Length: 294
Image (cartoon, rainbow, N blue to C red; front, side, top):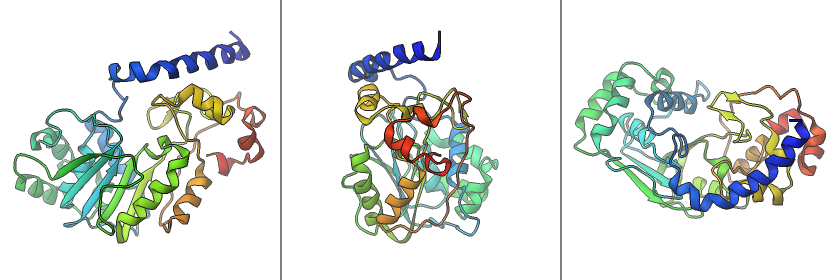
């Protein structure tokens, strides 16, 4: 099948999948649909990625509150933050999908064992902790961990002003509707205490072309080919929907909300051999620049 004939079938198939998504999504709880699914190796890799900040930035969570955006089915990042010293971790998501027993201490014994064994050394260093402290703190908890979960859409985060030391997310912000992003970022600035931090990994790839965190298949900029109305028809109800904001957009949005960019790390991917800027939708084609797109 030629590339042009593939495109002719791909677009209508995507529109049909999008139309069916509201009915099928609740029935298809396949692995990865809501993130890391509590898989310890993925959790450790994510902790290391969240710790890929400037070596001079060290975050002491001792008796501070943290907030995670979009934990999905994986409360393990929140658990890692409280064993690293945080007094409380709050997870905020747009839907309630946590499994039963999600805050039970026993749920996180495997994670703590992996941390104590040195499974996330950069996390230990950046968050001012060590295996001995993590084990001692975990042992001090009762039957449940000091982690909470709230359903909210981000226009108003369920936290007091200046009450949070750290806000973080993994592959969440790219899924927020474009028109809601500035408000969500401003809300983060509101709830952070002076000197607090926001750390986010934002995935700019077409989410139908992803092979885990570090791989792509085909043209990973394919999502930029379509005008806004068509992209919405193809993905608006699906977990692969992204707002298509690019790196410079995010930089501007965070700075406009009052943030100072203390650290910025990027993972670059090779463009597909078939990639051509001329195939991009108008705004992306006009503004095409490697720094803009990646």
